[in-house]
Length: 272
Ligand SMILES: C[S@@+](CC[C@H](N)C(=O)[O-])C[C@H]1O[C@@H](n2cnc3c(N)ncnc32)[C@H](O)[C@@H]1O
Image 1: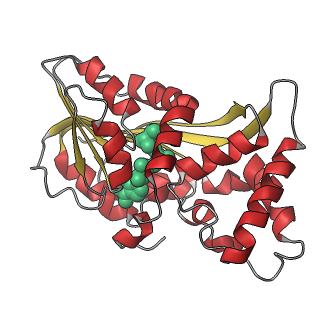
Image 2: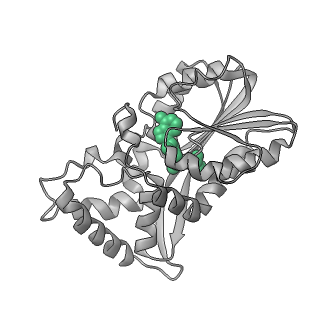
């Protein structure tokens, strides 16, 4: 994913609305993260990469009418859905790497739920986060640990497919966005410490999301990747690969449905 805004040009209102509908488990993961931020009524919170704003709205309920919550996201289609919720949250266009709209020490907490792996300039983003946090303010991050990507269902299903005709030799799997942007847990901790934030908590845990079908699971991945999933794949191969992926996931169906398993990191850091 390039650092330019072109990386965000592939989303659509349809994908954003799909994400809003199918991101229940994502919301729960964000809520678990927010629980660890220790928010109080009246707090000022920044939700970076707020997407369609479900978690942002919940944050606003947590801090109450005396608090203030701002959600930023680079993708206009996501913000349109977020703004359509109404309520007291302020939504604005913005990227984690460029928080110049906010003064130093503006926020009691910053939330980055499932966002950091999409951010190209992570060190710059964390420096910006530190700048806008007040002394004692907290940052919460959830992301996918790169060292465990191969232990997840998506890679286990996708890699054998890519090794076969007609995909073999025509697709560079390392260019696929979901494998490109993440960092390892060690890199994440280094980034946080180098940005002069204190590490407060770190957890690496297994995660599983069960979807009703292979189609629903692939729709979830597409919607959460705001149009970038399979984008680097030659156009003539995209639809066939998508269909094969749906079938391969469907073949893994268990009694509960089709599971997407992987690992997640939850990190809390604090500005001293
Ligand atoms: C998987 S969604 C997560 C949305 C929301 N935080 C949640 O928990 O449901 C990832 C979001 O990160 C946003 N994003 C991507 N790159 C970003 C960047 N550089 N800065 C801020 N947000 C970014 C995307 O537009 C997308 O809405």
